[in-house]
Length: 57
Image (cartoon, rainbow, N blue to C red; front, top):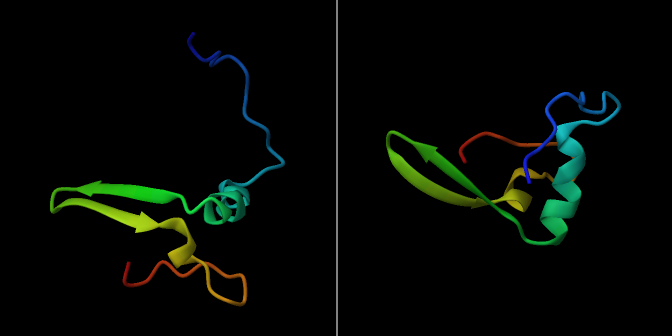
């Protein structure tokens, strides 16, 4: 089954809405670059005040 690309995505959501469910399920992001592959837990990006910290990851 292929995705129907004629339907536009919901404009009332944000990709950051997925951070909490991903964190609750201990999701891991696979980051690929020319330097190699890194696995980073999504929860490591969340600060205690609810903000996102993308530095030094």
